[in-house]
Image (cartoon, rainbow, N blue to C red; front, side, top):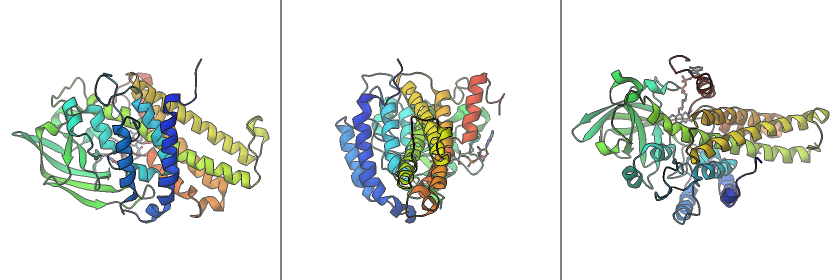
Length: 403
Ligand SMILES: Cc1cc2nc3c(=O)[nH]c(=O)nc-3n(C[C@H](O)[C@H](O)[C@H](O)COP(=O)(O)OP(=O)(O)OC[C@H]3O[C@@H](n4cnc5c(N)ncnc54)[C@H](O)[C@@H]3O)c2cc1C
């Protein structure tokens, strides 16, 4: 029999994350939405708490960093279920605040990249490092195979040159995982990722962006000018395997897309929970025993949004479960991200609409959640790109055959 409930063993973790979201993130949510670019110092204490729990093994996958294929159960820190644990706890944290979750020290998307492609020695060396991820460039967004930033081997160092834009935690993180090409003539197979520690000469933050949502999260433009990093900071293998193509780099996305889906699921749940309360206060009854079409328009709309939310949650769980069980999940990761990204935006905006003027007012957080959730349908691959990937996978077409 299929059991669609949350796995029992992760419920305590999810419930802990929910408490943290309610008691530590929600109270400072509006403050840092207004104080854009100001570092939320309250997060230092929270990050220390999560570090402590992780060391004791009680918070496996408590943040964005906790994702690695379970290739060997004997490896330290690698436990079956870390992807499921991550999506469940991250969605709870994002029920509190997406921007603050993205600002959590040591839980950057670069950490997921390290977890996905680093070798064992690198995993150990970069443990505890807070890493942002820099893929996007002024001329390269969705088409990440078109990266122009170069990395040239010079002795025992790589020299990086290029410009990266929209780097989440680009100013605050301890290091940036930078995607650069070893040889532009060799196409996508030559793209590798490099860990560049903060303060490395030749790497500088040029500016921070002002944004529609997730305003507590810093988003930086970073310039690399003859930036030298030790050759051993290239993540994974330096070999250019034209047969494997982009597979190595893309493995990161199979892990990070379910995480972004979980952020959308959490943010949308926050909107649904508050809207249900507001509707009840307004005397709207939502009856789960009667068809939506015979209920009030508001109740019917709410039920339809809840059904969309549930579908997104199940796809997110499936993609994470497959990663935990070493099953290829590119298709499911993109399906989860596409569904959650889209319905996340639809639901949060739908809740603003259902709540009317209260929804639009800063008196509640509904308007903020509608702003915050939009990014989750854009970064780590837009809605359209996820649909393209799903279509390619289902039709068995390559990226050259279906653009
Ligand atoms: C707040 C924020 C944080 C971010 N954080 C990071 C980060 O940490 N690291 C990082 O590397 N990047 C980050 N990004 C960048 C983000 O990943 C890109 O914005 C995203 O990949 C889209 O790229 P683009 O903006 O160049 O849009 P484009 O690729 O130019 O796309 C523009 C539009 O065209 C559509 N489109 C493009 N190609 C196709 C196609 N083949 N078929 C159909 N439609 C298509 C897209 O879906 C989109 O709607 C961030 C962006 C923002 C706004």
